Every structure is written in structure tokens, then in C-alpha cells.
Amino acid sequence: MFKSQLKTLSVIVLSSLIISQSYSADDSKKVDVSESTFKCLSALAASGRFFVDNILGDLDATLSVANSSSGGNYPPGSLLTLVPDEAMIKHQEGWNPATNDWEFFLLGLSAEGTSILARGGAEVASPSGSCFGCHQLARSEWDLVCGVDHGCAPIAFTLEQIRDAQATDPRCTNEN
Image (cartoon, rainbow, N blue to C red; front, side, top):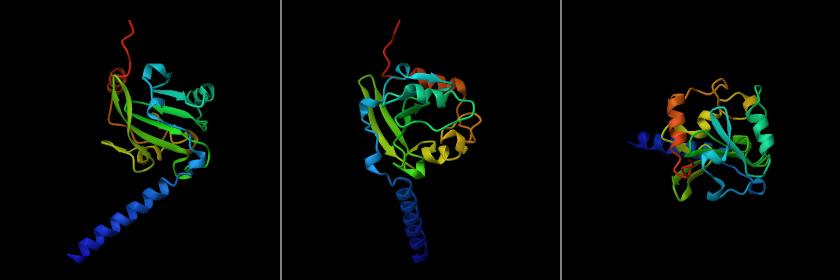
């Protein structure tokens, strides 16, 4: 029984070390993010299968990288989202080198707006698994952004299912 408890304790300690290393954020390089940062997908710029914004106002630079056929480094303030309830935001260089300065978000959505359910690095996980766990597989030229040919494992959803999820963003108003 003692061996089993020791093994469990070892796993907990190791997991804590990994998580603390992935979320060793330097708050002086943090971009200000609040629930109001996250908008209806139709208010964002479309780029391929996902949507982008730049909360620091540099949307052209964000779109330049997002639309590049060879990758690049996203500028600070870049916000990327594939589905309404998940997003990632790029902080200033040096904020968290382990995540290439990206912070991952799980969001609660309603017609009234957005709530942040979880935020951070490797510890942020959807039912599909750790956000960082998937994004870290992207080849270096893609700056941790997954795409069809960026090196990440395929997601378990078809393009039609992704588009359906995008179309059901409750924050969006019906524009006729």
C-alpha cells in the first residue's frame, strides 16, 4: 500500500512541477485580458478555419501571420479562436517562454457575454485534453498555432462540425 501512495505522490509532485514551469508567467509582460476582451466570432476577422483579433490594435500584423503560407510569430495582443468557447492570446515576449507567450482560455458563453472559466498554460484543458498539449506539437514556424498541416494531431471534428459550433455563438445577434 505504501508503494501505491508513494507512486501517487510522485505523480502529483511531477505534475505540479510541469504545470508550474509551463505557467511561470512574468506579470510585467502580461497583456490586459478581461471577459470583455472576448467577442462574438462574427466581430472578429476570419482567417482560414479560425478567427483572429488583436486586442492591442495591431490586427494587420496578426492577419499577416495568420494568412501566411510559411508561418511566423504572432504579435502581442493576437487573439485566435477556432470555436467560441476556446481562445488563445499572445502576451509580450518573455511573459511565459514555455508557452511561447501564449495564454489559453476556456470560456463560458451566453447572450449576455463571456465568462472566463479557466486561463493559463499547460493546466488549461477542455474535454479533449490540454490546450498546450496539442498546440506544442505545431512546428516552430507556426508559433504554437495548429492548422491542417502545421504538425498538430488532427482534431476529432469535421470542418462541418467546426462551422456548426462557430455558428452557434450565443454572443452574436441575429443580423438579417
